[in-house]
Length: 465
Picture 1: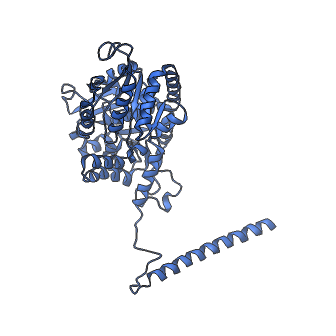
Picture 2: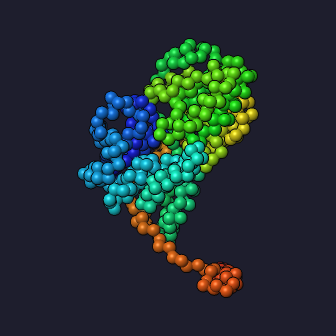
Picture 3: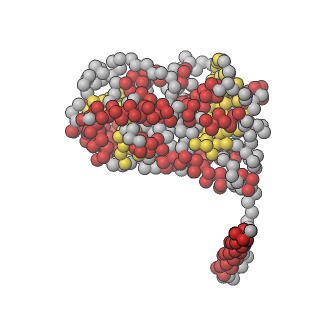
């Protein structure tokens, strides 16, 4: 068994704090299977904003111990102290480091060691950065996100991504940083690990919204969590408003809202659209609710929503709300863009809609309200699929294999030194560049012809042997 130093985000799901974000869920998604496999783990996790109440955040460092796990929940200021992570790592004498999520991973790679490091990039932050620059009208955000990404790309021995599409994007980044050279040819830097469904059993507090916010027989459409920079709130509002014209029993309920410190614009714009609507009394916002209360909203709703805009984050990212809906058997409607949404569409696990198509979005909501039995059948299929394909065990098999004998990447994180060599351009400043380029191309073509001719001769000789 290995000794593993894990760097991630807090709180963990079993702590039942105020909120859970994707980074918190991903940290436990990676940690629990390692514990179950018998590895010894020291986990240092940064407390994310607005996840702990003031009473819960009194100490800069909180320590919790359970069989196989030493868990340090720390404030951001402590987490950013390089010496703190370095000391914790050295004292534990770990065989390898695992950084889970981009920001924690960017801190993990700053630990001075020759031990192997696995870094998890849970979503492509450069796509997230672009959506933020668009919403805020400020390209300076690119530098902030790239510093984290580049630190990971420059040192990680293995990189996990949240989708195959993101793995392709990160391969391109590795190439631009000259880590795809002769020493790493054939080496698998990248491992897609889709988000998993939470293993904990959810509890249902009856009467959370039924009989208070909405009627017992109303058709409740639910949104859970934050309204991020990639959310298409125009389509969300237009589709709901059109559907409300047709379906009098339709009610919209939303938990979550503004993501403080990250996106404080998108949700407010959605609210502004609703304020002018004749149906504004059928939009119900309960704000952020404690983690343990969220499942009750799933259980008392008829349809869960996920709506993404046309942007790179949608293509390369993931959606934990869809995993959660599938886990509890809540029928769902999603735009098709993320990898999980393609799974839902191809396996008929829920209702889908093209990105930006408000007409189709409306039709799907109205159909759902009128075909509840068929909707429930889809949800049952989705739950079975998620339990099989998105379990902790199924999704982390590559990680579990790696930690049995963790190794450095063949290049030991040393970039190939690039030169100014150019096969086509020479120092000709008299207009002969095109001629030189043509000569270079002819030389390359001739070289390839000789290679193929030699190969053909070998094949012919072999045929005569």
